Image (cartoon, rainbow, N blue to C red; front, top):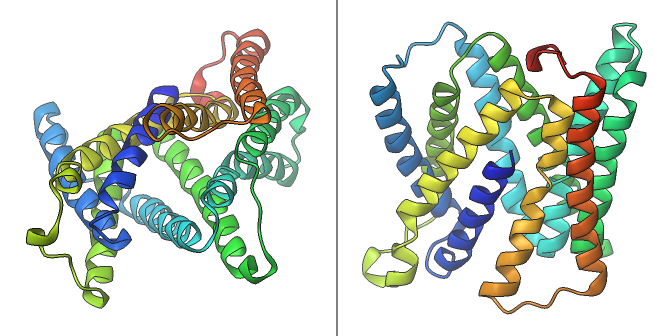
Length: 291
């Protein structure tokens, strides 16, 4: 998950450069096309067939994931970036809520997961400290959409865990999600004009393929993490993306990080270390899929 967070943060750098010439839906479409081609080559190289025994699980994962992605892009367009990112990173909190809710629904005690739940909440507190989100009264609708993007991401991550439990290969899961992004991007392109490549800067054009490849690798890492790892530990580790994004922001774009931001980064790192330590101490010999 830490590696996936690094890849996603690097992809965000590419999107920031490419967005100077491309619209959001264009980037979704091009990202999807590159990802489909890349993952198809990976499937072929690994000898993994496209046919899946659980097609409807992929449909649900792709639908929820793509809707979450679209909601996040809408939030980014209508909210301060820090606010949009914070709402999306609430996915870890939603994952924890779903796990506790599921345990209570089936009459199980979630107390064993209590310390891990605490690390998820601690990590989210670090995100808030780092990004310091704000929202105006006329941005409430966009705020609700951003909140739903985090909930949608959590549902998608839980479905990835379910796909891993039934033995679905990660590469096939990523491939079908990439197909979903192509469909959404293509539909969006019907309502917006594509930017002529003659008007695209070389800097933006050079990022199109890396964005798709980085997205594929990041999705691959994330899918493997949620398929084989303890869900709450993975959810906590996801916050590492804010650390990497802050470093990129500081070194590449000359942004200033306030002292409270550095404190937030320290809290995020601490939450990840604690989550790993608690998981190892509480359940050292438990298979990941039985968490």
